[in-house]
Image (cartoon, rainbow, N blue to C red; front, side, top):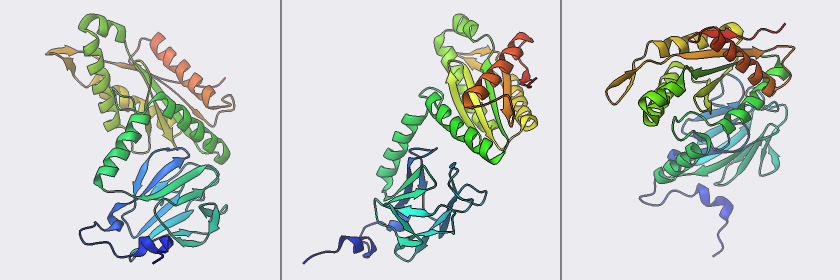
Length: 298
């Protein structure tokens, strides 16, 4: 008997097999969030760059509400929502199509999603792989590579859509003295605790990364300089008000903060935005530390 593999996914699950609906995922293969997994467990999941999208992608070619994933009985359907550039499945433009395990979905110019099924162990493994590739091992903040790639995407999006974007950069004041006085293990503990505090203090949409050593960065999408300054000051106050310690010893910690943003005629690319925020951070250091400085173009 010849089995049509294209219909296999629509057969009822075998006895004892978990419902496939509970195990459906989209995994980002290419785009601004490579490796990220999204569980498909709602009747309707919108993919797009707008505020109503449950799966938000940063890609100029993606419409605000580009496509949707619909759970319909035992089927999982991909539907285009009248997008400008179309929705493609395995290289073919589609309006509506049942999805099979392994199908690849192209939305926009660079974003590719893989539709797949995972059991609990598969999900844990995939998330661990994602975390290890994109996160800093010590602080669990995003690593510098992810930060650089994401900032490039965010900057291009901001320029093309004339949308505000702020970059906050900060580092720990006198961090070398902490290592020298309390030891490197204490320094690592401070970095870990500070990162956890920052992640609790930031918005879900902010991208928090370890830029290097004791320096961190926050990409604030949709935030102008005034809003970025509010975020920077919130982080500074949270740090100043937190009691850090190691091995029973209290370690006083403050941070110096610098920020820059676009639109700004003097900032031409993502590296220029980093340089501007870093310059403002340096002014905070020169000005006595434990303060926020804003880059202002001449």
